[in-house]
Length: 219
Image (cartoon, rainbow, N blue to C red; front, side, top):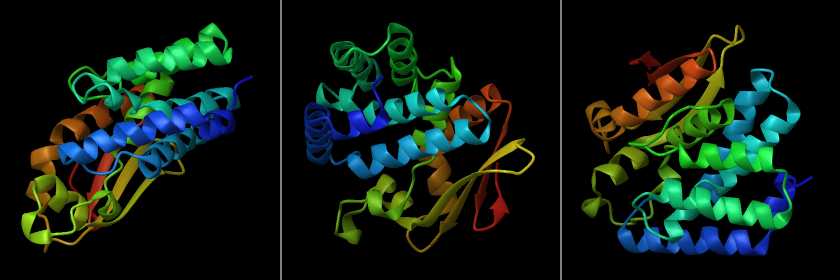
Protein backbone atom coordinates (compact mmCIF):
# COMPACT_ATOMS: atom_id res chain seq x y z
CA UNK A 1 0.00 0.00 0.00
CA UNK A 2 1.38 3.38 -1.04
CA UNK A 3 1.17 5.84 1.86
CA UNK A 4 1.17 9.60 2.09
CA UNK A 5 4.60 9.36 3.73
CA UNK A 6 5.87 7.46 0.69
CA UNK A 7 4.66 10.25 -1.59
CA UNK A 8 6.08 13.00 0.61
CA UNK A 9 9.59 11.56 0.63
CA UNK A 10 9.70 10.48 -3.03
CA UNK A 11 12.59 12.43 -4.58
CA UNK A 12 11.14 12.49 -8.10
CA UNK A 13 7.86 13.92 -6.85
CA UNK A 14 9.65 16.51 -4.76
CA UNK A 15 11.68 17.53 -7.78
CA UNK A 16 8.56 17.93 -9.93
CA UNK A 17 6.87 20.09 -7.27
CA UNK A 18 9.96 22.24 -6.82
CA UNK A 19 10.55 22.72 -10.53
CA UNK A 20 6.87 23.46 -11.16
CA UNK A 21 7.01 26.19 -8.54
CA UNK A 22 10.13 27.64 -10.19
CA UNK A 23 8.08 28.17 -13.33
CA UNK A 24 5.40 29.95 -11.33
CA UNK A 25 8.03 32.16 -9.72
CA UNK A 26 9.10 33.21 -13.21
CA UNK A 27 5.45 33.95 -14.07
CA UNK A 28 4.94 36.04 -10.93
CA UNK A 29 2.55 33.69 -9.11
CA UNK A 30 2.21 33.28 -5.37
CA UNK A 31 3.80 30.29 -3.60
CA UNK A 32 2.78 26.88 -4.94
CA UNK A 33 5.56 24.80 -3.39
CA UNK A 34 5.74 22.48 -0.38
CA UNK A 35 4.03 24.83 2.07
CA UNK A 36 1.00 25.07 -0.21
CA UNK A 37 0.67 21.42 -1.17
CA UNK A 38 1.22 20.27 2.43
CA UNK A 39 -1.45 22.64 3.70
CA UNK A 40 -3.87 21.51 0.99
CA UNK A 41 -3.16 17.87 1.86
CA UNK A 42 -3.72 18.43 5.57
CA UNK A 43 -6.95 20.39 5.02
CA UNK A 44 -8.32 17.75 2.64
CA UNK A 45 -7.62 15.01 5.18
CA UNK A 46 -9.15 17.05 8.01
CA UNK A 47 -12.37 17.50 6.03
CA UNK A 48 -12.85 13.81 5.25
CA UNK A 49 -11.73 12.75 8.73
CA UNK A 50 -14.20 15.11 10.39
CA UNK A 51 -17.01 13.95 8.11
CA UNK A 52 -16.35 10.32 9.00
CA UNK A 53 -14.93 8.99 5.74
CA UNK A 54 -12.72 5.86 5.88
CA UNK A 55 -9.09 6.24 6.87
CA UNK A 56 -7.86 5.22 3.43
CA UNK A 57 -10.03 7.85 1.73
CA UNK A 58 -8.50 10.42 4.06
CA UNK A 59 -5.02 9.32 3.02
CA UNK A 60 -5.91 9.34 -0.68
CA UNK A 61 -7.12 12.92 -0.24
CA UNK A 62 -3.76 13.78 1.34
CA UNK A 63 -1.92 12.23 -1.59
CA UNK A 64 -4.09 14.10 -4.08
CA UNK A 65 -3.43 17.32 -2.18
CA UNK A 66 0.32 16.84 -2.24
CA UNK A 67 0.35 16.02 -5.98
CA UNK A 68 -2.35 18.39 -7.21
CA UNK A 69 -0.13 21.14 -8.65
CA UNK A 70 2.62 19.12 -10.37
CA UNK A 71 1.02 19.90 -13.74
CA UNK A 72 2.46 23.41 -13.45
CA UNK A 73 5.69 21.73 -14.51
CA UNK A 74 4.16 21.43 -17.99
CA UNK A 75 2.27 24.73 -18.15
CA UNK A 76 0.02 26.80 -15.94
CA UNK A 77 -2.74 26.46 -18.53
CA UNK A 78 -4.69 23.23 -18.02
CA UNK A 79 -2.30 22.24 -15.23
CA UNK A 80 -5.02 20.20 -13.51
CA UNK A 81 -5.32 17.87 -16.49
CA UNK A 82 -1.59 17.57 -17.18
CA UNK A 83 -1.03 17.04 -13.46
CA UNK A 84 -3.59 14.25 -13.43
CA UNK A 85 -1.75 12.49 -16.27
CA UNK A 86 1.57 12.91 -14.46
CA UNK A 87 0.07 11.58 -11.23
CA UNK A 88 -1.31 8.54 -13.05
CA UNK A 89 2.13 7.62 -14.37
CA UNK A 90 3.83 8.18 -11.00
CA UNK A 91 1.30 6.20 -8.98
CA UNK A 92 1.03 3.41 -11.55
CA UNK A 93 4.81 3.00 -11.52
CA UNK A 94 4.75 2.86 -7.73
CA UNK A 95 2.27 -0.02 -7.90
CA UNK A 96 -0.80 1.65 -6.42
CA UNK A 97 -4.13 -0.11 -6.89
CA UNK A 98 -6.06 1.09 -10.00
CA UNK A 99 -9.16 2.12 -8.04
CA UNK A 100 -7.06 4.32 -5.75
CA UNK A 101 -5.18 5.83 -8.69
CA UNK A 102 -8.52 6.58 -10.32
CA UNK A 103 -9.79 8.44 -7.25
CA UNK A 104 -6.64 10.57 -6.98
CA UNK A 105 -6.35 11.30 -10.71
CA UNK A 106 -10.02 12.28 -10.88
CA UNK A 107 -9.60 14.67 -7.95
CA UNK A 108 -6.50 16.32 -9.41
CA UNK A 109 -8.08 16.67 -12.85
CA UNK A 110 -11.11 18.36 -11.32
CA UNK A 111 -9.51 20.83 -8.89
CA UNK A 112 -8.99 24.00 -10.92
CA UNK A 113 -11.44 26.78 -11.78
CA UNK A 114 -13.09 26.50 -15.16
CA UNK A 115 -13.05 22.71 -15.28
CA UNK A 116 -13.42 21.78 -11.61
CA UNK A 117 -16.22 19.52 -10.42
CA UNK A 118 -16.66 17.87 -7.03
CA UNK A 119 -17.24 14.49 -8.65
CA UNK A 120 -16.28 12.44 -5.59
CA UNK A 121 -15.55 13.16 -1.91
CA UNK A 122 -11.79 13.28 -2.49
CA UNK A 123 -12.24 15.82 -5.28
CA UNK A 124 -14.52 17.91 -3.06
CA UNK A 125 -12.02 17.87 -0.19
CA UNK A 126 -9.18 18.78 -2.55
CA UNK A 127 -11.11 21.72 -4.00
CA UNK A 128 -11.84 23.05 -0.53
CA UNK A 129 -8.26 22.54 0.63
CA UNK A 130 -6.82 24.29 -2.41
CA UNK A 131 -9.20 27.22 -2.74
CA UNK A 132 -9.13 28.15 0.94
CA UNK A 133 -5.33 28.49 1.09
CA UNK A 134 -5.03 32.26 1.19
CA UNK A 135 -2.37 33.71 3.49
CA UNK A 136 0.33 36.36 3.75
CA UNK A 137 3.20 33.86 3.52
CA UNK A 138 2.22 32.93 -0.06
CA UNK A 139 3.35 36.36 -1.31
CA UNK A 140 6.89 36.31 -2.68
CA UNK A 141 7.10 39.90 -3.89
CA UNK A 142 9.03 41.82 -1.21
CA UNK A 143 8.25 45.25 -2.68
CA UNK A 144 4.82 46.27 -1.41
CA UNK A 145 4.72 49.23 -3.80
CA UNK A 146 4.57 46.83 -6.76
CA UNK A 147 1.93 44.44 -5.37
CA UNK A 148 -0.68 43.29 -7.87
CA UNK A 149 -4.18 42.42 -6.67
CA UNK A 150 -3.23 38.80 -5.88
CA UNK A 151 -0.31 40.00 -3.77
CA UNK A 152 -2.50 42.56 -1.98
CA UNK A 153 -5.25 40.09 -1.18
CA UNK A 154 -2.94 37.32 0.06
CA UNK A 155 -0.73 39.73 2.00
CA UNK A 156 -3.77 41.26 3.69
CA UNK A 157 -4.71 37.89 5.24
CA UNK A 158 -3.02 37.73 8.62
CA UNK A 159 -4.73 34.49 9.67
CA UNK A 160 -6.74 31.85 7.83
CA UNK A 161 -8.53 28.85 9.30
CA UNK A 162 -10.85 26.18 7.91
CA UNK A 163 -13.22 24.63 10.42
CA UNK A 164 -16.22 22.32 10.30
CA UNK A 165 -18.78 23.04 13.04
CA UNK A 166 -19.65 20.50 15.72
CA UNK A 167 -22.96 19.68 14.07
CA UNK A 168 -21.11 18.89 10.82
CA UNK A 169 -23.45 21.09 8.84
CA UNK A 170 -21.11 23.94 7.87
CA UNK A 171 -17.52 24.41 6.78
CA UNK A 172 -16.21 27.88 7.54
CA UNK A 173 -13.27 29.77 6.10
CA UNK A 174 -12.36 32.39 8.68
CA UNK A 175 -10.02 35.19 7.60
CA UNK A 176 -8.40 37.92 9.63
CA UNK A 177 -7.77 40.68 7.09
CA UNK A 178 -5.66 43.83 7.35
CA UNK A 179 -7.63 46.16 5.08
CA UNK A 180 -4.63 48.47 4.79
CA UNK A 181 -3.28 46.15 2.09
CA UNK A 182 -6.44 44.77 0.53
CA UNK A 183 -10.17 45.35 0.79
CA UNK A 184 -13.00 42.85 1.03
CA UNK A 185 -13.97 43.92 -2.50
CA UNK A 186 -10.44 43.08 -3.72
CA UNK A 187 -10.90 39.62 -2.26
CA UNK A 188 -14.15 39.03 -4.11
CA UNK A 189 -12.79 40.46 -7.35
CA UNK A 190 -10.30 37.62 -7.68
CA UNK A 191 -11.81 34.92 -5.46
CA UNK A 192 -15.54 34.99 -6.20
CA UNK A 193 -15.23 32.05 -8.61
CA UNK A 194 -13.25 30.11 -6.04
CA UNK A 195 -15.81 30.74 -3.34
CA UNK A 196 -18.63 29.53 -5.60
CA UNK A 197 -16.55 26.42 -6.26
CA UNK A 198 -16.06 25.95 -2.51
CA UNK A 199 -19.82 26.19 -2.01
CA UNK A 200 -20.44 23.47 -4.58
CA UNK A 201 -17.71 21.25 -3.12
CA UNK A 202 -19.11 21.71 0.37
CA UNK A 203 -22.60 20.81 -0.85
CA UNK A 204 -21.21 17.60 -2.37
CA UNK A 205 -20.13 16.64 1.17
CA UNK A 206 -23.44 17.61 2.72
CA UNK A 207 -22.12 20.89 4.09
CA UNK A 208 -22.85 24.59 3.73
CA UNK A 209 -19.89 26.84 2.94
CA UNK A 210 -19.48 30.03 4.95
CA UNK A 211 -16.87 32.77 4.56
CA UNK A 212 -16.17 35.03 7.52
CA UNK A 213 -13.89 38.04 7.19
CA UNK A 214 -12.93 39.86 10.39
CA UNK A 215 -15.67 37.93 12.23
CA UNK A 216 -18.37 39.08 9.80
CA UNK A 217 -20.11 36.50 7.63
CA UNK A 218 -19.99 37.59 3.99
CA UNK A 219 -20.99 34.33 2.28
